[in-house]
Length: 336
Image (cartoon, rainbow, N blue to C red):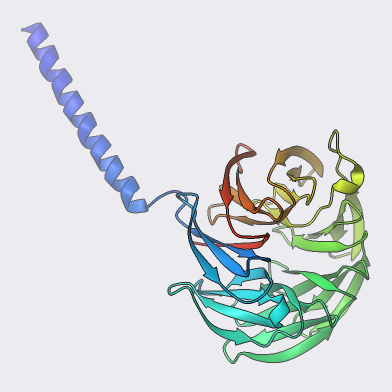
C-alpha cells in the first residue's frame, strides 16, 4: 500500500508540474519574444535600408532609398523612419508598414546626422556643407529655423530633459551647446580633433564627445561647460592612429558607455564611473554607429567596410552574431 500511495502521489506531483509548465509556457508566449523588435540599417553606398528581424537576427527586407543614406531616426510614434539622404540634399520619410518612401523633409544641403525632439514635433538636422543645424517641423514639413554652428557639423544629441541641443563640428573641433527654447548657442566647448558623436549621461550631468582623429572621448561637465577628463584607448598590436572613436551610446542605467572605434574594429565598453575601459569587443571592419534594442539587452554596431552588423550581448560583453547587410552600412535605429 505504501508504494502504491507513493506512486499516486508522484503521479499527481508530475501532473501538477506539467500543468504549471504549460501555464508558464502560455504566459511566456503571450509576452512575446524577449528581443521582438526591428532594426533598420542605412547602407551609405548601397543607397538602401536593410530591415533586420531582431529576434531571428536576420535581414528580412532591403529597401531602395535616396543617394548616400547616413543618419536615421525613428518618428515619435515609431511608424516612420527619417533618413538623411546626403547626396539628394533631403531627409526622406520611410513608412515602416509599407516600406515605401512617402515624402521628404527640407533638410538643407548634405544632411548627415539628426535627432528628434522628445515630443516628436521638431527634427534637428546637421547640414555638413553649410555649417548649419536645420530645424524642421515634422507635421508641416517646413523649416522653422536654421542655427549657425561650426565648420562641418555632424554629431547631434539632446539632453534627457530636451532642453539642450548639442552639435559637434568636425573642423572647428567643438561641441556647440544650444538652448532649445531660444535656438541660440550658449556655450562652445573645445574638444580633440574631428568630433563625431556626442551623448549625454542619463542624468544629464555629463556630455561625452568622441574625437575620431584625436582618438579620445572628452567628458564635459554640463553645468561648468568644460572638459573634466579625456578618455584614451590602448589596444595591443594597434597603432594609436588606428583607434578612431565615432559612435557612442550609454546603457539604460548609465553605468556603461559603449564607443565604436572605427578602423580598430572594436567596440569599447567603459565603466562610466571610473571612466576606465572594461573590455574591447572585436567587431567587423570599420565599426561606426551603435543602437540598443528596446530592452537594452543587445547592442547593434554597423561595420562599414565588412558590410555587416555586429550584435553584442550587453550582459556578457560579447559579440554573438554577425549579420550581412548592404554596401557600407552607416546608421542604425531599432523600433519596438
